[in-house]
Length: 144
Image (cartoon, rainbow, N blue to C red):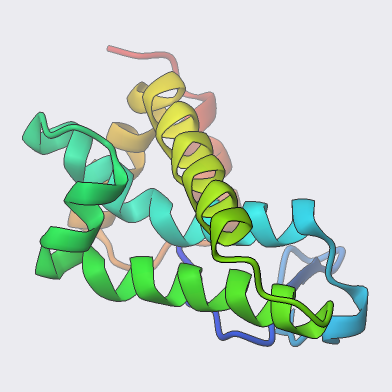
């Protein structure tokens, strides 16, 4: 998962043949519900990983009550609200369901790939600049 900040207008990730990543805004007319939920899951994945380390429940209440996660939670909520409003309605129940689905997805991916998350965290603590080749090498290395 990429730790990329999102804005309510969305992003699209493109990688060229040299593994250089470009981030460009994606027009709201191209958004889909699945795309929004995935973007919010990416946004919430850092908090989900931190909750895993702390042994906290990975749920909406933790995100709302902890100042470390609150801004990511609010930005995720805003992405979903903008999407719903663009579709000419904003159903708070549907937004809440989408937010919960994104959080569940983030937690599931983090837990299922915890060993890889730890490897990347260790590598980042040693060098804050990792490119795609470094990440590939780290993730291809067998666990010790």
